[in-house]
Image (cartoon, rainbow, N blue to C red; front, side, top):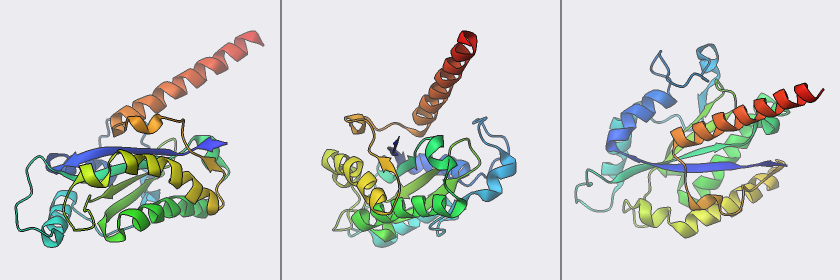
Length: 213
């Protein structure tokens, strides 16, 4: 059975322009060579309310925070989650089933962290493995911005346990990642580097098999 990939990275104000350009494919020259620009038209946002990451997310925070105090310059404004699995999981899913998978994952986070706090949920189909970048403003129940409280150790552990069960209930044949994998949340570059290394290992295994034949 395939395993869920649910990895988080913290975004401050200075990160929002870059991640927005990447997620929305606003640049023509991509450092990530796995991106096939001819397929970028297939990407979609399940939320569709954020056009300019820095402007729109900061505006949302300032209009909804419960305190008049200015947001610290080093505050985490977005916790971005990458949701995915392996290629074998997606190869037998139709486009509609793939969309339902990501939509169901988004619904889990909406139920637990507030629908209104999810500012984007972009699904990328122009890379080798479908995945979703989902940005959540870490407002607590009192609308105070605090990534440490909202996504604390207990919350991260619960996500790793509950998200695959939620998706199983929706009919998807998937299980949680390796036990203890929630102890370190990989950044997007780290996650993609891990996937590249995994593919290289898979290619080496295939080469060895061919040599044995």
